[in-house]
Image (cartoon, rainbow, N blue to C red):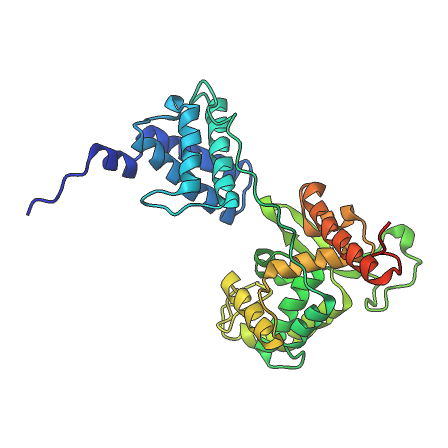
Length: 343
């Protein structure tokens, strides 16, 4: 039996031309080398842009110089409505893809691969405004208490991981990416040398952790007393036990084989603790949101929280202030004797 011959449209859709493929490779190299985008972000860009190039090839477009604005708007429509090969995307996912497409065309214009930017006037869909989810301090304490502080090696590791995630607001990728040497000490400035040392720091320094965030940016975040105690217990009593099964990995958090704990492994730790605590829909980002919200509720300045979270813009951090405003309204409505009195 002679196999069916692919139509011209199908062949083009599955095999973007060399010019399109070359432009994509150049743009991804630019993002990785010059922009320093994280591996996960690059993977998302690559996936979205490959779909875009297949779409262009299916419309008979051989290079970015041939793309019209109508091509970009039609691609956005396909993203939202779906097609025979892909389900419809929500506003956030479609918006991410359009941002990637706009970046590709700006790159093509700058590099002389096209004379115009057909995507410049196409705006990503406005995503639904969703406030970060945070849980109460009582829920956090239940979650952390679900992992006994005096357990076996894996239990000590799990407690240290969860304490660190909530105590520093770290992203899960940042936490599992830590090495032992990233736990450091912030020594006091010379002008403060005569000051009394911190009660939990004999040499007057403050324990801190060095995170590598998005774009390879580094930041130092102080470690609170509870997280520090959990980390000390893990490093002294548990990590050597886990490391004995491995090959001397420098990772702070190790799995049962002595290698670096993965994102999936860290997720499993949190999921198991949440189930034992009777909490639903808790994620590593829930701990990050709770960290920020609880700081702001306690009176922290939004720019301090911005630095602790590693946000490039304070605008990103300011969304947490809406959470605290909602909390203030609730407290006011529940507490003030005339809060619900009609004027």
